[in-house]
Amino acid sequence: LGRPGVDCYCQHESGAAVLQLQFLINEGALVSASADDALHLWNLRQKRPGILHSLKFNRERITYCHLPFQSKWLYVGTERGNTHIVNIESFILSGYVIMWNKAIELSTKTHPGPVVHLSDSPRDEGKLLIGYENGTVVLWDLRSKRADLRAYYDEAIHSVAWHHEGKQFMCSHSDGSLTLWNLKSPNRPFQTTIPHGKIQRDGKKPESCKPILKVEYKTCKNSEPFVIFSGGLSYDKACRRPSLTIMHGKAITVLEMDHPIVDFLTLCETPYPNEFQEPYAVVVLLEKDLIVVDLTQSNFPIFENPYPIDIHESPVTCTEYFADCPPDLIPVLYSVGAKHKKQGYSNKEWPISGGAWNLGAQTYPEIIITGHADGSVKFWDASAITLQMLYKLKTSKVFEKQKLGEGKATAEIVEEDPFAVQMMYWCPESRIFCVAGVSAYVVVYRFSKHEVNTEIASLEVRLQYEVEDIITPEPEIIPPFPDASSQLPSLKSLSGSTNTVACEGTMKDSIPCLSVKTRPVRMPPGYQADLVIQLVWVDGEPPQQITSLAVNSAYGLVAFGNCNGLAVVDFMQKTVLLSMGTLDLYGSSDPYQRQPRSPRKSKQFAADNFCMRGLSNFYPDLTKRIRTSYQS
Image (cartoon, rainbow, N blue to C red):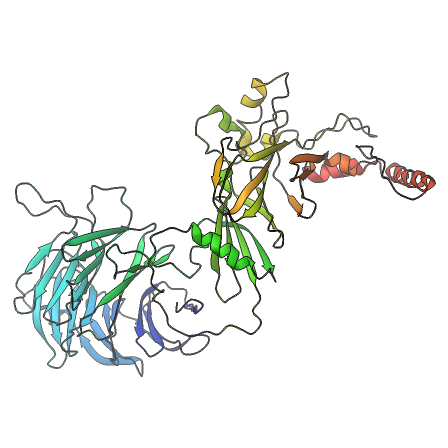
């Protein structure tokens, strides 16, 4: 990811998981280490990134890589505890290997575990710090091929970070502790803290916490250093979300994340490891998102993300694409979207600014609308290379929240995601917007720049197979869904229980699947619900899902249908104009018996009617065919 609009995508053909990535800083190249124990050098300076070199390890498993700034040597640590050195230009092994037994001293017989950390000393690139899983750290002198220093700690190490002067380093451990070591006295750490451990009353050391998976130690010229780490929370908070902790001087800030943390990286003013680092932001890669935290403000706000990473925050259930929209539309949607965006974003520019891109000559406004499983609708500006979110609408807000265990809740026809958006209609000129949801409803929205406080108008429509009234050649017609519960297993409890019993005799079976809010609702500027149209249960049969939707904003009409029929609603007057069963639509005579008016002579009419009657005589099995096709 570079500046907004700049991104590229590469895939390892092996399909192996990616273990680690290392940029060749300012060179436009990248090293990747994958789980099949291969190293790859990617060239990012071409339009489509490609692999220049690959190197496969056959006898050893790669666990950690490190490429110092402006160095031509790539250090590769393995599961056996050995460290190999690869020449980055030729991409072949140099033959120099730091064997684990040489590194840790002959007096210790036990294997130190895999290499979990490698880094060069900020003061001297000829010195390599090697961290082993069991808690051993070795500072290896590459020139004299011997260890300068060995430090032992009885907790497993997860990561190591240097102070920029190269006299101290910090380790993070599996018991939630951070240890700070001085090169002059490697016998024991001169500081040990468990940042999230509770202090015990009897003066014992604080209780241990979850492992600190990664720590970064960044210095500032004019303030205390930053210590940033992931993990390390206490075990007693079972429900705590994944967190990033920022320690700055005496202040400890815990930033809770919506998803597990994969990795994080501190952005600093300098690439040189021996200067004051001056950190200004932290990039945190989460399982389903990427966030950047602003370190320059004391409340650590996050930057507003210009990439559409959260497009599948709730699964996308339908999409619509519009080109050549009126030119004022994108700014208008953006301005209402910006007003109710979350407060508390950083006021600085997005800090990731690599790459360059130029807009093509033929830019015209394009908008993509996505409907989601949770009932939300997002409008995206697709004119540039990336999708930019303009505006988000929550269609579920027109309905009451379902309280579980109520008798009424049995009217629902879908248990999961009852607000999922199935179809959308948008007229960019009139800005009328319409959605059809999975629970057999249609909502008509109007656009307004002003906040209103109003009740939501609602209509209920019956669409059923009125089989009894139709005179057909076949009196033994059966309704096409004789038993809804056989079609939809989740309806067994619904179709004959509460609804029909409560209201036998009367026609009170006409209840919709969801209940629209009855009290006045505050609607912010943007899209405001104008009318909710719901299909209702009929004689204990649930309404069928809406399968087609059409809107004419000039006439103020919305038409929608399902397998049982078609309805046309006037959303200006908020009245149902037409509601027809499928059999009516395909029947030979007009069920509403409206004579069309026309300047033509009446003889012509008689002929037309005769023609229609004649057709229905030819096709007496038409209704039967329709019925069977729906059953199949």
